[in-house]
Length: 390
Ligand code: ATP
Ligand code: MG
Figure 1 (cartoon, rainbow, N blue to C red):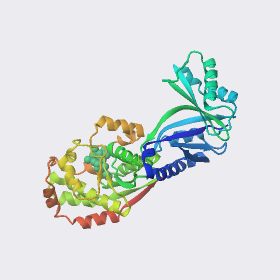
Figure 2 (figure 1 turned 30 degrees about the vertical axis):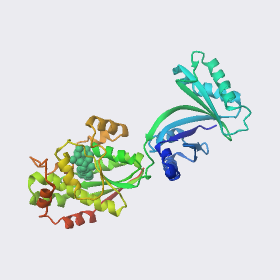
Figure 3 (figure 1 turned 90 degrees about the vertical axis):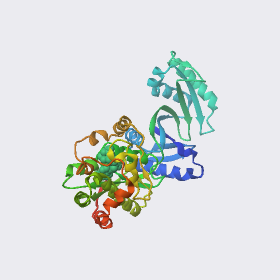
Figure 4 (figure 1 turned 120 degrees about the vertical axis):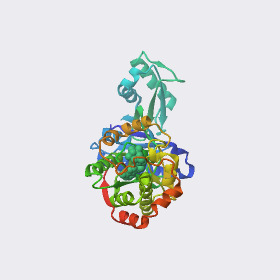
C-alpha cells in the first residue's frame, strides 16, 4: 500500500465565492509542481487536498519535499494505507507512529469514516486503536482533552489510512490567484526576499533586472539568473527581462547634478518597469526597499521614485529589520548567492553626497535635460529575455 499526502489549505478557505477558483488554481499548481515525481490523483474535500500516487513509479518522498514550496498550503501530512480491518489499522498505527508515540506524553485517536459501510462506528474504531496503542506504548497516557499527539485514522473507499505528524507548509495564497506583478530583482539580499513575499500572497512575479555592462559584469547578471532560478521553486518557471541600462546611466552621469544620480536612475527603473508591467498584464511593481537602509530609501526619496508611475509599488520589506530579511533569505535559499560580491548598477556612479530629502519637483526639473521617453524606449526595445525553468 502506497503512502498518500494530505495538504491543508490556508486562508483561501475563508474566501467565500472565490473558493472554487482558488481551489482550482491550487490544484493546478500542485499538479505542475509534482510533474517530475510521477503520476498522482489530486482532489480536494473540505479544505484538504489529497495527493495519491497512481503507481509504484511515483517518488512520494520527492513529492512531499516539493509540496513544501507550494503557496496556499499550511500543513502537509503523510499517511500510510492498509487493508480496511481493525487489526491491520492498529498494527499499522503502532509501527508507523513509533517515533511520534515515543516522544509524546499523551495522545488520543480520532477516526473518520468516508466509507460508512465500515462495520464499526468512528468512536468504536478510535477506542479500539487507542487501546492497542496504549498496550504497545504503556508509558504514554490517553488524554482526550489536551493530547500532545493526535492520531488520525481515516477509512476511505479503497483503504484505511493512518496519518503521520504534520509539517508546516509554505503558507500564503496559491500562486496566480492574485494576478501578476513585475519584480525588480537586483543581485542583493533584499529583492529576492521581496519577490518571494509578494509571490506568497498569490502574485506571479515577472523578474526585471537592470544591467549596465561593462560597469556591471556578466557575473553580476549570472548571479541574478541564479537567484531567479532558486525562486522558481516557489514561483514556477519565469522569464527574466534584462533591461540594458548603460546608456541611461551614462546620460545621467553626463548631464545631471551628481547628488541626484541615484534618484534619477531609480525613476528610470520605475518607468521601464511600468512599461514592462503594462505590456505583460501586471498590476504592480515589487521592490525590495527598506525604510532608512540607504540614502535612496528615505520617505522623500521613495516619493520621488514612485512619482513617475501610477501603478502600486509593493515594498514588503519596508518595515523590516535586516536580520529578519536575512532570516527569510536563508530560509528560501537565496542568501548564499546574494552575498557573492558582484557590483550592481546602483553602485556605479554613486554620488559622494546623495540628496536624501529631495523635492520631487526639483528632481523632475533636473532630469528634464534628458530625452526621457527616447531613453526608456531605447532600453525596453533592447530587452534580453532569459528563461529560468523550474
Ligand atoms: P537589494 O538587496 O534588493 O539589492 P538594496 O538594499 O541594495 O536592495 P537598492 O540598491 O537601493 O537597495 O535597491 C532597492 C530596490 O531596487 C532593490 O531591492 C530592487 O528591487 C531594485 N533594484 C536595485 N538595483 C536593481 C537592478 N540592477 N535591477 C533591478 N532592480 C534593482
Ligand atoms: Mg542593491
